[in-house]
Image (cartoon, rainbow, N blue to C red; front, top):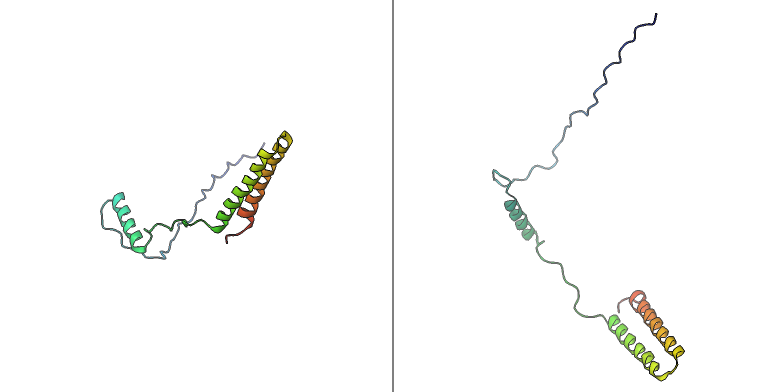
Length: 121
């Protein structure tokens, strides 16, 4: 005969111990109202912002164009006008295509140098 099978014990219930919190900062005096009125809370927040100086908008971008951008536009216009003027001098298609390519290369190289390599001056 086989020995009687003992039933499994019931599973243990695992729980966290009771949390004990220590209050580090004393609570500030809350507005004395019986309800949590969102408009009243927003008004109080706005008054605190104004009192701390956060209501001023950040300064805007400068209005004056930098000399680097001015020089870039002048050189870009002058260089492309010179190369574009040569388009009317040449009478063949190969020269026309080469000048268009030179204008694109000149514009791309000038943009890279003036806007990405040079710093503001």
